Image (cartoon, rainbow, N blue to C red):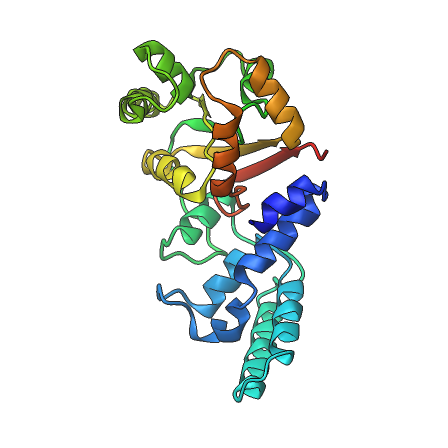
Length: 272
């Protein structure tokens, strides 16, 4: 079972849980990071990105402990590589904190592959300001939107299903097309709006983010989380065709947004 799911059900505090999960996901990167990665990204890029996601000194310590425990002929060389990567992180100013960037727009462009230097700002285009919600069903996204941005237009797959007379899981393609067309119309006019959807996996979020960044939008991801029992109780009380078993299946696609995904990422998590 997924580590995030086990830790969530155990009531581990959000920040600690996510730090553990992020380190697990990349704990072997320092073994070979000095060679870059298969996508051709440089050791410096990997440092810069990861420094926004987790403490690099801790990642290096975990990688070193992992390698020390292995019976591997090339152990000494890998330990040397980890130490050199640690020293590079120190030189880049990101061993104990995020690598500094000229501004958030430059950071996102750099992390999405633009050939820019982190220290020199890019000119940001005029675009929509978008709050992109993320979180399991019944985690409070509708309530948050009504309380904090009642004045803004909302793009929502649930609203699209309702407009088209569809149940959850029925003709998802038509609902997605309807919602995306509404988002494009707002983006073309540079209007601010809220995109209210689960955006549960990185793949799901990337599809939305590619669209938003393609129109020059400034994006804030707001991630909402509640304990499992509360989510199931809330869902049973809602007027929805989504069953609790459907939510349980969704848990295995669950990936919390990373700080590197948007200009600003905010976490509002309640631990059970």
